[in-house]
Structures are given as C-alpha cells and as structure tokens.
Length: 168
Ligand code: OFO
Image (cartoon, rainbow, N blue to C red; front, side, top):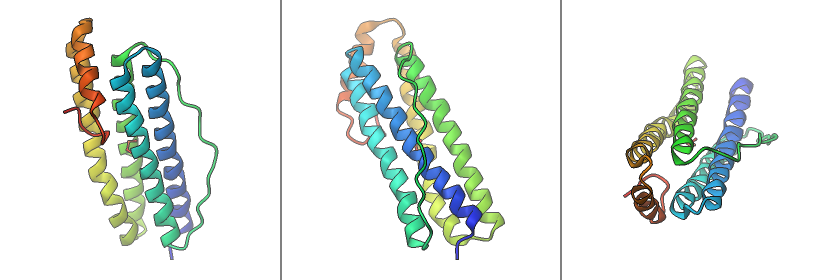
C-alpha cells in the first residue's frame, strides 16, 4: 500500500510535468511568433515529451491503486527576450525539476518505498539528459550571439529534431 503523503507528492509531480509541457508549448508559440520555426519545432516536440512524463506518473499511481487527482495548471510565461532567454529559462527550469525529483526520491527512501524509488530512478537519469540537452543548446545560442546567420543555421538544425533531446 502506497503512503498518502507519497500519493500527494506524486500527484504534485504529475502537475509539474504537465506544467513543463505547457511551458515548452508556450516557448514553441513564442518562437513561431518570431519566425524561428526550428526552435519552435524543438520546443513543441519537447512539450510532447513532458506530457509523456506526466502520463508516467498517472500510470504509476493507477498501477499502485492510488487516486490520480488533477489540479489547476499554472499559466506559463508567453514572452521572452530572444532564444538565449528561452534556453536560459529552460536550463533553470530543468534544474528545478531535478530538485523536485530528488525530493521525491528522498521521500521514497525515508518511507522505505522501494517500488516508488525504483520508478523514480528513470526520472533521475532523465533529468541528467534534460539538463545536458538544455545546457548544450544554451551554449550554441550563446555562441551564435548577435550573428543572425549562425542563429538561422541552428534553427535549421533544430527543425530536424524529433526527440526533443538532441540538436544533431
Ligand atoms: Fe519532465 O523533464 Fe523536463 O521538465
């Protein structure tokens, strides 16, 4: 039987993952508005990935016989000051999510809930990838700086992204 505190914490994380999806989709819409459709594509694909993360929490709660409770999803920002500001935000957001996942693991360990700890390990590994990907794109955007040709080349690269986790 899964502890109620853990059920509540997992439901909160389900909400946080849906918020992440909402945030990435808002970033995609922002990039569409400034005609960087490759960046928009990357963020749109990543939004889907976040909704998949949310569903992993949904499915896990159901598999443990726990109640899924959906709550209000906070509105994401809608405007940024360019690609650097977006990916700086992405990296900080993913670092924050890593912290949330680590806290869930701490709770699972403190409750000796080995099944939930095991479930969460997928997210522990995923967050390493999330931070690496966000940091990698941020570095490239920084290198492009004010050079619009470099930014457009990067935009073209991101157009081909179908996993939301790579720039190549
Ligand atoms: Fe769900 O990994 Fe990003 O936020």
